[in-house]
Structure formats: structure tokens, C-alpha cells
Image (cartoon, rainbow, N blue to C red):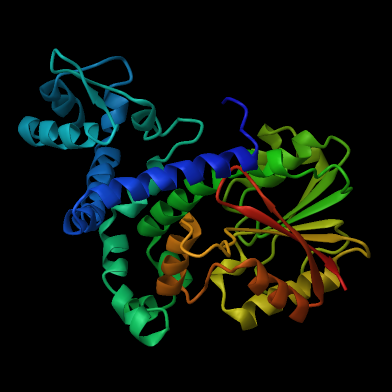
Length: 361
């Protein structure tokens, strides 16, 4: 994978892209510009079908006619042609003069083995259960409460556990998004000053392994309630860091491993309303070394009015599912202060995720 550009360069490019998007919409009649946005859900569903049928994999060995693709993936030739024809207009696949379709860089990102694969998230975003969840967004907006517990008769986490097949798809989708953030986080922040890094509820340890590989003198503690089943031990051994890493089985509201110099909370706090978020933060505050640092890794909503940010969309998703939220810098400062921390700085990365660094007060 090529080196990541600095965050400031990425933000500058995003500003230019946003300006061009606004210009494009300004040049179109407003009803047509709105129509294009409304139809975005249909494009998401088309991408989901391509991911479900593994269309990208069928083209790995070279361009094919639509009928050949259909034969490989088990689809109707005419219907498959119409699907890839649409996606090609968005740069997902490309049609050659001879009528064959080939992979494009975006199509390659649908491959399961791509270094930054989007297959998992594409598969999740078009799944019927996910669509049904979003069909009840209006209820969440009307009431200010998550609609999923009313729809499913249980909370989101309980539902994912009770429905293992969809739970696997959901976790896979989240994992594909999370894995794209590891390199941007490592590029944006120097972890070398920490002797012991605790990744609290850190899954199988992707980020922690990256930090330990980049900081050979550091030791790590991975805490997660699923470490016995999510392959964390084998993954850390595969990454060559298992001898410098301790694995602890613990949940979000359990006691936090003590003695860390840096505590990582990656996509943890945004799942929870303030009371639960404060409970997690206070447990971390009790466990950390004097002079330690808390590193909250979330999509921090920018203060700029009407500025585009993917965190604003995720914020609605959290409201819908669990009653959580993405927060602004000021909201994090207020939340951290209530838990005994002082916000030191917010470090942007080349991705949408930022690092909120805080110290104990």
C-alpha cells in the first residue's frame, strides 16, 4: 500500500472535492440534484448485490462478457449485465469497447482479499436487516430514542448475539471499516513514548499489533470479552507480537487492566449515552498510571457549519441503533472533564477518525 498523505493534505483535497460537488449540484436544477441524492440508496443496494455475488472475484483473471460473469457467479445473464452496466457508470467496473467488463480500483476494493477491502461493509449496508433498521429512522428522530429495541424487542448488542448469522455480517462490516483506520492512526500519532499500551475492548488486536510492531520497546495489554473466540491469540502470534502482549478477558463495564501508560478506546464511547460513557471513562481513570494518557479514537464532528464529514452519517446510525452519538471537540472536553480527565488535543488523521488525547486531572 502506498504511503498515506499527511492529514492536512487529505483535508485540503476533501475541501476541493466538496467545492466541486457543491458546484455540480448548483449547476443542476434543484429537483434533479435532490433526486440524485435520493437514489443513493439504490446504488448502495446494487453494490451489495455485486458483493454478495462476488462479481469482482469473477474478473480477477481478466475482462469478461456479461454472460461469462453471470455463468461464474450463478446469475441471469441479462440481469447481471444491467447490474454491472449501472455500476460502471460510478467507476465500479469498466466496460471495454468489445463489451467485456473489467476491474477498476474501486471494484478491486470489493475483493475480500484486498488490503483495504470494502466487501464486508458493502455486504452489510445492503443487507435486508440493515435496510429494515434504517426504515425506522423516522421513529428515532421523532422520539430521540433508538428505534431498534422497539423493533427487535431487544437491544442492538443482544440482537447481534441472538442472530449469529447477521451478527457475523455486522461485525465483518465494522471490521472492514476499522481495518482501514489502522495505518492512518499509526501515521498520525507517535506511540513511542508509552512503555505499556492497553487496548481496551480492542477486538483481536489489529491496532495494538500495529503499534507494537512500530514500537519494538513497548508492551501491550489487549482486553476484550471475545478474546477466547475471536482468534486474538493466533492473530497476535501471526503478527509477531504475542511475546510482548498480555491478553485479558473483560467487558466494557468490568474492571480495566491496571498499569498502562496509554489507554486506547477505539470506537467505544460513541456507542453509549453519557451515563455509560462516563462509567467506562472513570474505570479507565482508576486503572491508569500517573502521567498516563487516554487516547479516544472516534470520528470527531467538526465545528465548521455545514462541513461534510462521514461522522455525521454514522451519528444517525448510532442514534438509530443504540442511542449513542458522535461528539464534537467541545462535547468530548465536557465529557472527559466529568470523568476526571483534561482534553489535551485532537489529532486528525488521513482518515475520518481522530485521536482525542486526554490526561488525568
